[in-house]
Every structure is written in C-alpha cells, then in structure tokens.
Length: 171
Image (cartoon, rainbow, N blue to C red; front, side, top):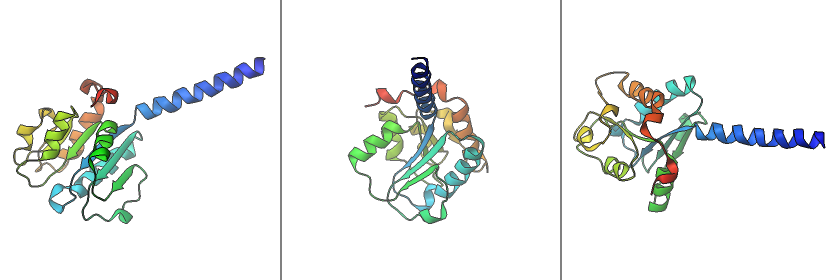
C-alpha cells in the first residue's frame, strides 16, 4: 500500500508540473498574408534572441506567402504557410497570448482590429494607423529603434500577468 501511494503521488506530481509548464508558455502570433513589408525577418530575429533567454516562448507564423521555412531550424517556431480559414483563425486566437504586427510599412491592419475584438494584446510598429488602432499603446514600438521590437516583446513577457491573459474566456 505504501508503494502505491508513492507511485500515485509521483504520477499526479508529474502531471501538475507538466500542465504548469504548459500554462506558462507565452505564444506570439503573426497572422495574415506573409509579405516582405510585414517585418517577418525582424520578428524571427527578435524571437530567437528572446527564446534563447526564456524557454517558455513559442512563435506561430500563420498565413500564406513567401517564407522559406527550411531556413528556420527552431522547434519553438511554427510556420503555417497556407490560407488560414475562419475556424483555424479562431483556434489560433484562442491559444495565443499576443499578436505581433511588425510591419515596416502599412496604412492599417484588419489583424489589429480582429485582435481588439478578441481582446488579445497586440505589439505593433509605429507605422500608418497601427498605433491609433491598437488598444495597447504601451506595446507600440519605433521602427527606427534597432531593438524596438525585441524590447517591446520583452516588455510583454515581463508584464504578461498585467494583461489578464485568460484564454478560456475568449470567444
């Protein structure tokens, strides 16, 4: 009987820490058409620097476009290079913590508006109307600052609790 209790305790102990690790995983999402002007290389570079320091990060790049996924050798980066339908978009928005729009040039973005509707924080560059359209003004970064995106992503990581992330309440 004593041995059974130890095995049972160990089993539940392992499950608890497995789910605790998953729950602390911070997911960044780039969503939309993959184009050169949307700053994907800067996003990947910033993410790789941050993920070297914090192992509980994940980046999902979802959308159709030109990207060479074979050059990205990192298990923390997931590429979905195809048209994303509504049901998959909804699924992605349920699992993400923050949407990143590192655009080099833009006038506006439907992704930011959709993120607002889902109450998902957005990290956006200071181009076009992106800063005016986001609800999260503190997550706007200056594209002229070489480390602007990386610093803003780090700011989000360090204050993720203040955003009240509760993925189960999104609809």
